[in-house]
Amino acid sequence: MAVKIFFPTCCSSAENGLLIGRWMEEHQSAVVLAILHFPFIPGNVKRYLGHLEQVTGQSLSVLGTWSNSKAEKNEQMENFLGDLSSIFTHRPWLRMAREASSKFWDCRIEGQGDGADVEMVLVYYDQRKLMLSELHNVAEHSEIATVFDTVARNRTLFARDKYDEGPVKLTHWQSEGVEASIIVELCKQASVPVCVFLSFLLSLITYVTRILGGKPLSFLWNKLSVCEQLGKRLDSLRLISSSKRAQDHNLFMRKANTFVSLLLDVVLGVVLMSWLYRGNHIGQLADALIPVADHVALELQGLLQWLMGAPAGLKMNRALDEVLGRFFMYHIHLWISYIRLMSPFIEVILWYIGLSACLGLSVALSILSDIIALLTFHIYCFYVYGARLYCLKVHGLASLWRLFRGKKWNVLRQRVDSCSYDLDQLFLGTLLFTILLFLLPTTALYYLVFTLLRLLVVLVQGVIQMIINLLNSLPLYALVLRLCRSYRLAAGVKFRMLLQEEGKCLRLLMQINPLPYGKVLQQYKIPSGKFDPKDSWGSLCKKLFIGELIYPWRQERDKQD
Image 1 (tube, rainbow, N blue to C red):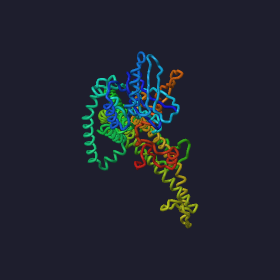
Image 2: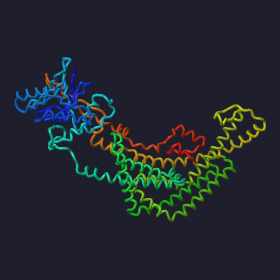
Image 3: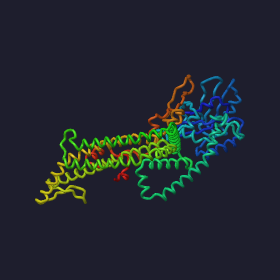
Image 4: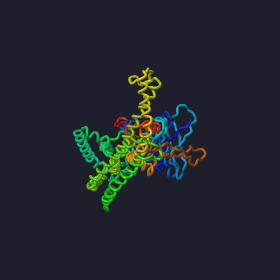
């Protein structure tokens, strides 16, 4: 039988004393947490261990004795350490001894009732790293998970150092002095009033939003990207400013990732705002915006004139072609008049929009996406008109095709049923089918051209939306933690065999395997499902073929005309 002893490397040079830790009966192993030094009163030691058990919820005990002989062996000290097993009645009882300037220790175990041969395995571990790390992808009640949990839950034990005046003196990873930072403590103290102020401000904003949340504002809130992004930022601020302490590691990491993401977003937004207002870049953008809009309108006019002729040598229905061309040309004239009317105010509008970059780069990009949608609103109108007309003809042809086959669509049962038609109905259906069939190529060509233009605009908005989604969901804190302190995110452990000597116990060094970067992104990605595409490629192609409107970055409940 093998008994594993997990021993902290920080206690290797400690003075003589008692081994304080936890015995794991189900795994036949012991976790040494600290060494308690002389002098001590056994009653005080037992009371201190009882207090730790109440705080941590784990049963700690005196596992055995530790002897560090820096000179020749002291027989009296050895006998005294051996007699301590009668005062502290934990079984089994460990006796560990280190000789002067020797790497190999004597490890013995006493009190094993079965009398079987026991092989001792000494496993060294870094106590600080184990306490601060979070273990992933390991069974909850495995031996390694139990060791990590034991070390992590005994922070109270590690809070005592050599400067504490108390009944016991301990050696552990920070017994020389508790790690602390004045800056961290000041930030903790300042975070309380800041969180209270943010909570009050957010509740006030929520109250005002509910009062003004009528139909016009709710419509804009659902349609504009900047409103959705501001709503997401409000949710992030609510999460960060919550006065409740994070109950588990996942919630803490979500808060930290959200805070770092929000901070980086604001910093990038401020950098963008400083660039816009330095060197009169806003004026340059305003001067370039109107010519670009005019150029797009002129190109659309040229495209419509090409469609009204003989596009690619195709023979179109002249009457329908003229009607559709003039109809769309009229919309372009309206759009040019609208741009001319707004041109004196473009620079002022952009100046005030530039101030919104202080709220974050994602907010500025959302405004850019909305500006593109407004500047291409005429293209969207063309697409909707063409899609509706094309969809009407496709559904009409499908219905009339069922009429020829003696079928009809049952609306109540949502299926195709058999039906008998008289001669007049069949004659009228034949006329309508012929008219729709010969008018379909003209409508399909307009629909194809304007759908391609719409997809081009959607592609540009999709790239912007991907950048926004990346800023919102990237777990920056977890990535920096993985880069700088990889042991904080542990995927498991590995054991390295140390130099061995015949007759001595097996010595292993336990090291932490860091979590891979892909797993870090998958585990700690900030949820942002509002902009995830819900349609597959097959569903998208089907909608394009039958003429249904596409909204790639909207949920099903938002897909309204």
